[in-house]
Amino acid sequence: MIKRQLSTLLLVCTGLNSFAQQDFNILHYGAKMSLTYNNTAAIQKTIDAAAKKGGRVIIPPGNFITGPLELKSGVDLHLDDDALLLGSTKRLDYGVSGKPLISAVGQHNVSITGKGIIDGQGRELVENVLLLLREGKMQDREWLLKRPGENSRPMIILFKGCKQVKVNNITIKNSAAWVQSYNDCDGVDIDSMKVQSTAYWNNDGIDIVDSKNVKITNSYFNAADDAICLKSESTGKSCENIIVENCILRSSASGFKLGTGSVGGFKNIRVRNLVVFDTYRSAIALETVDGAYLTDVNISHVKGKNIGNAIFIRLGHRNKDERYSTINNILIDDVKADVPNAKPDIGYPVEGPPPKVAPHNLVPASITGLPDHLVQNVTLKNIEIMYGGNARKEIAFIPTDSLSHVIENPAGYPEFTMFGELPSWGLYTRHASGIHISDFKITLKQDDFRPAMVFDDVSGLDLKKIEVPLSAAVPVLVYRKVTQLRTADLVIPAGDKSVEINNK
Image (cartoon, rainbow, N blue to C red):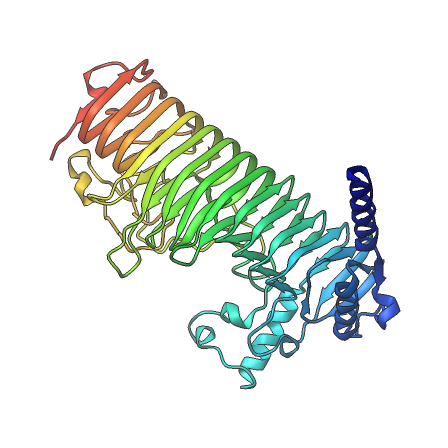
C-alpha cells in the first residue's frame, strides 16, 4: 500500500516537472522580430498562456521590442542565445507611474533565465522623457531642480512580494534608473548575471530591499551608481540571510553597500570573494542612518583596485523621529585595496559627482558613530591598503589638538567624504566601542603629513600587528578619549612621538 502511494506520488511529481517544462514561444502568439514593432501584447499573451499550465516563455534569437511585461507564478521567461529583448524608448508606453520593463508582484516560482540580453535602452528612453517634459506632456518636479525623477525613468526588473525567484545567466544593459530591485521577497537566486548599465544616473546594478534568503553569486556589475546595494525601507522589515559571493563590481558610487535606505534592519549578511575596481566611492560601505539595526555582517576576501575608499562604516541619524540606528558585530577580513590620489572613475560615461564639501586631502577608511550612539564590536583583520598620499596643508589641515573640529554631520547623506577633511590618512575611528584591529598594514605612495590612525571617543580598543611605513609622519597613532586600550606588535616609527594622547 505504501509502495503504491509512493509510486503514485512519484508519477504526480514527474508529471508536474514535465508539465512545468512546457515551452511557449512568443512567435506562436504574434511576436515579430523587428526594431520597430512593439511586441508587448504578444509577449504578455504568451506569459498568460504559460501561467495557466506552467512553463517557459521562449524569447528566440532575434531583436524584439517590448513595453512593460508582468510575469506570473510558474513562469520562466527564457532568453535563448542571441535573443535581444529591447525596452521601448517611448516613455508613454510605460504608463503614468513608469512601470518596470519586467515585473512580478506577489508571485511565486518565477524566473528569468537564458544567455540572452535585456536592453532597457535607457539613454534613448530618457531623451524621450526630456522631450515630453519640455512639451508639457509629462510633469516632474525633480526635473526642474536636477534631472527627471526615478518615477519618470522606469527600471528594467522589479520583483515585489514574491517567493522563490530565480534570475540566472542573463545580461542586463542600459537602464534609465535602477537596473533591478527585489522588494519584500523571500528566496531569491541571482547567479552568473552580467549587468552593464552606465546609460544614466541612479543606475544601481542590483538592489535588495527588505528581502530574505537571497543569494547573489558569480556575477558582474558595472553600474553608474552602487553596484550591489541592500536597503531597508520599512519599519519592522529587514534584509536577512543574504549571501554575496564571487562577484566583480565597478561603480560610479560604491561597490558593495548596505544603506542608504535604512529604516528597518540588516541581519546575517555574508559577503566573500569580491573584486571592486575603478569605483568612485567605497569598496565596502555599511551605512545605517534612518533608525535601522545593522548586525551580524561578515565580509571577507575583497580586492579593491583603483577605488576612492576602502571601508566606510557609518551610524548616523537622518530620520526625524527618536529612533537611533545601531551597528553591532561586524567582521571584515582579508581586504587588499589601492586608493590613489586621483578620481578613480574618470572617463566613464557617468562619473561620480565632485565632492559637495570643502576641498580635502585623500580620505581614510573610517568607522564613525555619534556621541552616545556608538558603533559596536567591529573587527578588521588582514587588511592591506595602499594610499596615494601627497596631502598638503594648504588644502586642509586639522591639528591633532583640534580633533573636535571634525564635523559630526549626523543627518548628512552617508558617504566617505561627508566630514570634509579628516585628521588621518589611514584609518579614522570616532564614537565606537569594542574595536579590534589586527594584521592591519597601510602604506603610502607619497608622503602624507597627517597621523596614520586617529581614534576619538573609543571604548575598548584592541590593536595588534599594526604596520605603518617607517617614513610616516609622527605622531603615527593619536588617541583622544580612548579607554581600555590594548596594543601588541606594532610596527611603527620608533620614538615617543609615534603615539599622541590628547584628551581635550
